[in-house]
Amino acid sequence: MTTTNTAPAEQWQKVQDQVSNIRKETARVIVGQDEVVEQMLVSLLCKGHCLLEGVPGLAKTLLASTLGHILGLKFQRIQFTPDLMPTDIVGSEILQTDSAGGRGFEFTPGPIFSNLILADEINRTPPKTQAALLEAMQEKQVTVAGKTRKLEEPFIVFATQNPIEHEGTYPLPEAQLDRFFYNIRIGYPTIEEEEQIVNLTTGKNLPTASPILDTAGVLELQDATIDVPLPESVVKGILKLVHSTRPGSEHASEFVNNYISYGAGPRASQCLAKAVRALALLRGKPAASMDELRDAALPILRHRITPNYNATGEGITEDDIIKKILP
Image (tube, rainbow, N blue to C red):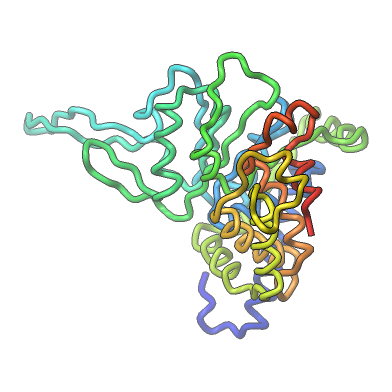
């Protein structure tokens, strides 16, 4: 897929057609969850990793695998368990014997060597194994036996965790949480959507989606996202919003000073700047606006601010705080 000879207007139309086709194919398999699908697409376009939270049975795995199939990406699911080892993720060197009788170590790649990784129930494995993802998520590379190996682009991690189950889990440290571009919370479907789910998935012919793109096409979409204009007014809105989450800042309200221990860091501003561009692209807008900023604020900020004991005691959540300070 090349666009070197394509006029800007034609290229924009091509991108919009691709986005429309991706949404249509996704809707054939996933009922409802339009906002969640949009947020996952934003993460993909921004080369950002995504943390999905929701009770069991809300199609988190199906969402990730369906998007991977539609986008033509190499997909791998890793089930995180208490006995999972780092080598189970990144791979290891195994002693091999060749046809001539010689022996030597040969690297066997782990499932991390894919385009789209689903880290299922990531908080069920100990910190040592969770940390095996850190280098891959941040540096797009892994180091085994002293040798560094680059991961193929695009490389995106979708991780899931169950927010209502705490026994036998290992909470993600703040440093790892900050590496997730989006924190998406998936809710229950409506009764009409659930009726449609039952009708679609309990018969003989299960719905399937067709591939729309390939890895080269996804990389093109990621490049197109960067080209979406970001007005200065939106940049100032991003900076003001992020600074207003920091207690003691000149932009922080009395509400923030009373209920937040630690606010969002500069990475939040960077992620918001990327997300508003991607949202504008997905919605067919010529430039990012404050509407996109308001829609991107919750999934980007909710895992980057730390409510204090006052908030916990009064039942005030991260989402409550963010909604209170939105422009």
